[in-house]
Image (tube, rainbow, N blue to C red; front, side, top):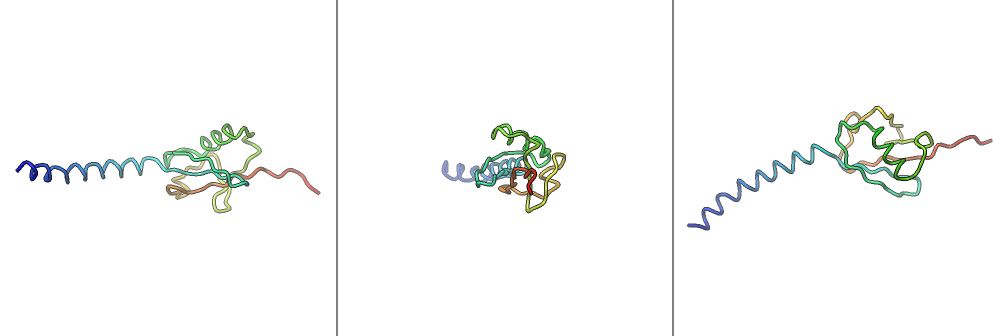
Length: 105
């Protein structure tokens, strides 16, 4: 009988755990920022976090001037005031970081 009681409580516990996992997944997403050498920096952010926070953190980690780097997703330039939510980003999506090209003849 003790075994039966344990079995009946386990499914409830499992479904509760699954609900918690779903909430956590929706609360944050993992995004990658990849440079021209294919080096990646990973960030865990809320979908409502402005890209400016991600851009600043990336530049600080890479010791780059923020105004010298352009961030793109699928070839489209991202603005600092946009969010992953606005861009329909999903967990695991990648942003490309490009050094701005200056001058040239």
